[in-house]
Length: 217
Image (cartoon, rainbow, N blue to C red; front, side):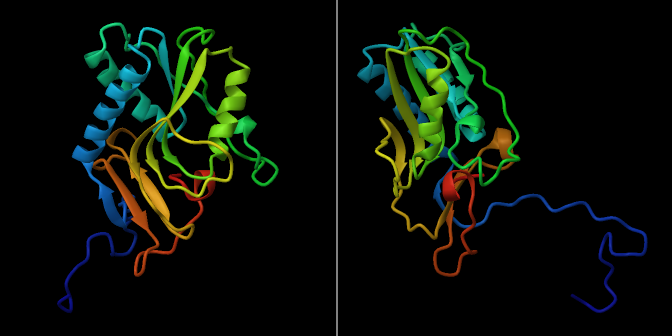
């Protein structure tokens, strides 16, 4: 910078707006990749269930809810028997097994669009890691009804499971180390272009703990 050059917001009494949360790391899925993955998952759900007449999508906050809504749009496009209204959200806060470590977690919203009894419920999450969030989701579901079958769709499966849980539908299998951090950014939530990023490799920023032990916060 040339000496004497004025910097906006650096004068006395000035205020500087906080910098936006710009995602950093290596992009492993871009916007078009995410769109294709969701379209493929919609077709796989229809094929496995021989239609989607009794399918209900429940997104796990935060980004799982957005992904579930996008998936509902694609399901409705490929399967006329599916209604776009059959998408909701499932808060798992009070069912987590780490509440004793973080007892001040804010409780979110659970919204179930229809009765879950004898339905095919597809849980939707952004990143599948240890499996503990999904275990909590299964416990939460047991208080809401008795689905005929429960399936799981995850945009990214990064491995390192601590429980015997696996996804039925996966956008991308991403081998990682436990030290690495996988983050999903979506326009509706983050205000930036859709992307899946991984950091903590080599010169990347150090890994940080997020939801589900390192998953997207």
